[in-house]
Image 1: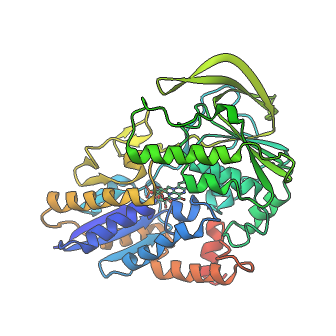
Image 2: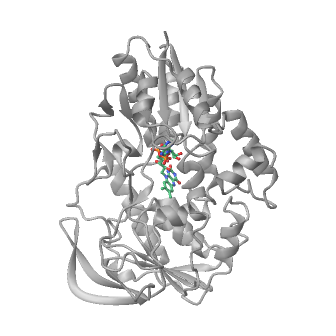
Image 3: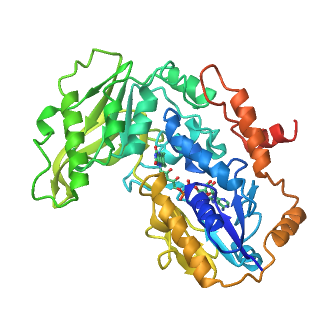
Length: 437
Ligand SMILES: Cc1cc2nc3c(=O)[nH]c(=O)nc-3n(C[C@H](O)[C@H](O)[C@H](O)COP(=O)(O)OP(=O)(O)OC[C@H]3O[C@@H](n4cnc5c(N)ncnc54)[C@H](O)[C@@H]3O)c2cc1C
C-alpha cells in the first residue's frame, strides 16, 4: 500500500515537501490541504505585489501539483472542517506547513489603540488576503511609523509612497491601490531599535528606496559607521551584505528633503516605548538607544513622532493547532527537527519560526520527506477516500487544482492594464467565480 500523506498548508514549505515526496522512490499518495481557495501561502499574500519576479517560483509548484501522486484540497481548514486528530487517523503521515500568520506584539503600552496595525494585517490587506479585506486602514495621516528593520518593513514603507505608475505592473488590489493613492501620507518613519549595522534589510530592497519616483530617503549621516566593526563576529557573506547596506545608506545622506513630495526617514537607535492618544493613536514615543553587546539599551533620551498610524513589522508567530505540541512562548511547534509526534511532522515557519527566504523552506520539505520514508515502511491508512467522505459529510466546497487554475485565469483576464492579475478578495467571490455566480 502507498504511504498516504496529508500536507496541511500550500505555501512554499508545503509544496517543497510535496515535491520531495513525489520525486522520491517511495510509493506515496500526497494530498495537499489548504484553508483558502487559492494556494501558495505568502507567495500570493505576503511577497510584495510590486516584486512579481519573486512570485515566479509558484510556476514550479504548478508542476508538482500536476503530478499523478498529488491532489489539492483547497478551501478546507484543518482545525475547523476536520480536526488534526481525525486527519491523523486518516493518513499514515500528516505534515503541518501552516506558517506563522500572526504578528508579534511590541509589548508596549497603547498597542491596542485604533491605528496600530500589524504587518500581517496590513500586508494581507494590500495583497487581497480574504482575512483582511475589511481592514480599511485610515491613511489620513501625514506621518506613518513603520516599526522594524527587516524586508517586510521596507516593503510596507515602499508601498506607502510609490506612485500609481510605479504600482501599475503590481498585483496590489484595486481597492488598496486607490486607498494608498488617496492617502495623506508624506513622511514614513522606518524605526529600528538598533543601528544600521544590525539592520536586516537585503541590499536590493534597501537600494530601491533611493530610486523611487516621488519619495526621497532621509538619514542622519553621522550615525552611519565607517564599516562593520572588526570585532563583530559574523560570516564573510554577512559582513559583505552589511557593508553594502552601509554604502547604500551613505548614498542616501544629504538628499534634499524637498526634492520630491514624500520622504522615508531611516531612524535608527530608536526604541518605541509608548503609543500615545486616547482610543486612537495620536503619536509614538520613542527612546534613543545605543547598542551594547548587540542589544539595544535605552539612553534615557526620549522623543515623539506625531502620527495616527503605526505599523509594527516585528516578526510573526503562530498560535498553533489543537493536537500539535506547541511552544507558546516562541509561537512555534515543538518538534525534534521536524518530527512532532507519531506520523506528525512540521516544516517551514511553523517549525522554524519566521526566518529566511522562500528557498529556505526547501530543505525542510526534503528532510520531512526523508523522515516519512524512514519512519513508515508501508502505508496502512485510507487517506483521501476517508478525507473526501468526511468533507462530503460536512458539505464542504472543495477547490481542486483545476478549479484554482480556472480562478487564476479569471484573475489574469480581469487585471487592470499592465497588471498581472486582479485578485478576488473574498472566499465567497472566489467560489462564486468557480460556480458561475
Ligand atoms: C510580508 C512578507 C514578505 C515576504 N517577502 C519575501 C520575498 O520577497 N522573498 C522571499 O524569498 N521570501 C519572502 N517572504 C518569506 C516567505 O514568504 C516565507 O519564507 C514562506 O512563505 C514561508 O512558507 P510556509 O510554507 O512556512 O508558510 P506560508 O507561506 O505562510 O504558508 C502557510 C499556508 O498554510 C495555510 N494554512 C494555515 N493554517 C491552515 C489550516 N489550519 N488548514 C489548512 N491550511 C492552513 C495558509 O493559508 C498558507 O497558505 C516574505 C514573508 C512575508 C511575511
